[in-house]
Each structure stands twice: as C-alpha cells, then as structure tokens.
Image 1 (cartoon, rainbow over the protein chains, first blue to last red):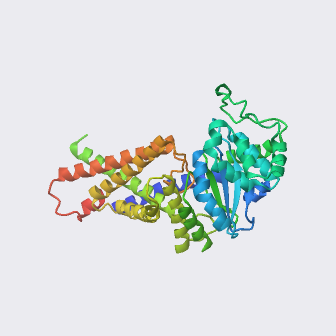
Image 2 (image 1 turned 60 degrees about the vertical axis):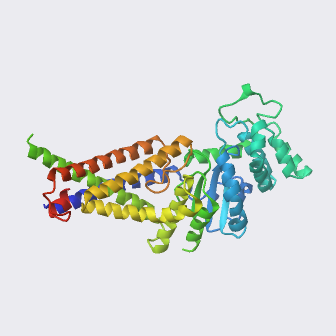
Image 3 (image 1 turned 180 degrees about the vertical axis):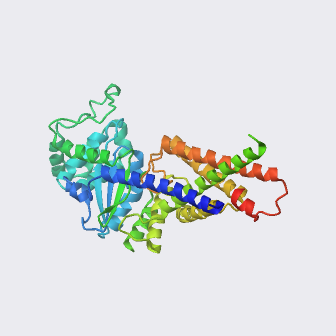
Length: 242
Length: 177
C-alpha cells in the first residue's frame, strides 16, 4: 500500500467515524421526539396563530419573563405574524416553558393560556411581552392583561385563573422567591402549561427561546437563541422557493 | 529510539493529526451544507436553504452586524470544505495548518465569549441542534490544541530540513511535511 492510498483510507475512516457519530446523534434526537408534527399533540389550539396547512410551522418554546424571548417576540415574531402568518406561509405554535428562577413567568403563562381559551391569546401575548420589564419587577401581570382585554373578556379570563395564581402582587415578598415554577393543583390552565413543558423536555429545551421549524411536516433540529427577522425570513424564503 | 525512528514517528503523528483535522473540517462542511430535511434532495436550492439556516446560528451569537451575518454564513462552510481538502492534500502544510489554527482559535474565542455572556444558543459547529456548553467548548479546545500541535510540528520538520528541500512541491513535502 503506498502512502497516498494509506492517507486516503485514513481520512475516509475518520470521516466514517464522524458520520456514524453524527447519524447516531440525529437518530437519538429523532427517537426522543416522536411527535412528527406539532399539530398532532396540540390540546390548546388557541395558542397557535395562522393556518395549520401552511407549508412552514414554527413551534416556539418561550418564557414570558425571559428577556431574549421578549426580544425575539418584539423584533422577529411580531414581523413574522404580520408578514408570513397572516399570508398563510407560516403557522406559529406557542409553547409555554416557564423557567425555574423566574418568579412571575408561570403566572404570566397562566394568564396567556386562560386568554387563549377564550380566543384572546394574541392580545395578551403581546401585552405580556410589551410590558415585561414592568410586571417582572413587581408582579403586576394582571394589570397588563386587564389593559389588553375588554372588561367582559377580562372577567372571563380572571375566572379561569382564579385560585391558580401562586404569586399575586400583594403576596410577593423576597422570602417567597421560588426556585421552580409552582404548579397549582386543580387548575385547568396548568394542564396546558404542564403539557407544553413535558413536550419541551422531550426536545429537549435547554434554554429559551427554543424553536423548531417544520417544513411540509418534516421536522428540523431545534434551534435556540435570538435570531433577527431578516435572517429568519431569508431562511423561510429559501424554503418557500424550493 | 534512534533519531531516525523518532523523526519517522513524528512524521506519522503529523500525518495522522493533519488527516484528522481534514476529516473534521470536511465533516463540518458537509453537516452545514446537507439539506435541512431528509426529504429534500441535494441541489443548489437545498444548499442555499442549508446556508440560510446556518445564518440563523451565526446570527444567534449576536456578534456580527446584521449585514455581515449572511455573507459570513454563506462563505464559511465552503471555506471549511476547501481547507479540509487542502489539509488532505498535504501541500504547504505549514500554511494550511496555521490557517486552521487561526480559524479554530477564532471559533474558540467566540464560543468562550458567548458562554461567558450566558447566551443559551446552538453551537452551529457541526450543523444545527447542538447546544453550546462545556462539552462543545472542551471539544473545540481539543481541536485547537491538535491544530496547534500540527502547526508546530509542520514548522519544526521544515526547520530541521533547513533549506535542503528545493520547493514545497517536492513529493516528500506534499505527503509528509
């Protein structure tokens, strides 16, 4: 065997090893995520925007108190909703993933989920992100939800979260700082949040925002962190032009 | 061990290190260029989609200005491919390995900065889906160390040969330097 053949063989062997490790990783990830499309597992369709038959689905796991999630909403998702969700190109799926250590994110998720159940998710979702800094400082989530809804709708939402909230403005004291999102028992909205979190753990979500893109039902690898609308749009355009 | 045997061992180790780096770069380029979904076939359009997807990972590092993200993301994987092939060829190894070390050093510095900032993003090193963390930092740090060792080895062997070799294109240098 001459040197050139030996070198080519060695390079090929290393490539095969790397290829196998990559395939194994991808295979393991696929096994972990048995749901083929997000539509198959949804129990709360009101937290989704757009048409389920859109060629692209964007499934976003987010935490209402996470600053990067707010940036992602304000600078990327808002434009996406106007430009691509409204035109039927993208179906946007919201998943709640309140992180440990964020005092009010679980309560914010409860308000958003309760609003979703009466078809007012979009308004409350926007209000929570728009005013994140304010309510994250003092826990006044309710105030901003009330501002986003009509009095009648607010009453309907309030009725659903009544008894669910673990932290109200009056009860929040430094000593009550929780390290894990507190889940109230016998609370209907928590069921939806728990399901989102269970799905997130399967991904696995390691930080927020984490998003998964589906193209014509085919799932791509999850991506984390902030991405600007211009770059996300470029990717979606490349998919839509296939 | 004789001086000659030590020299041969050094050359073999250098070759193995060079080919390992080459394979890693070729694999990294392939992982970024392959179609983003399994049902999509290889085409110019699929490569464009893959590079646009890679741009999302480059963007998430929040390091480059928006106008630079897409050009960098579209140039980097082809550059990795060329660098991998250059390392396989063994031609002018001192320069290819030096370029590899500089590139890996740059990647490593960016990753350390991102990790220190606490950004929870994907590494993007070998395609999508891999979270940046201590494991990826250790792996890329090891690759940087390997690349540095190959670069030093390539320069040392060249120095030992002095100016005896007439040109970079001689067969011995092509496959052993």
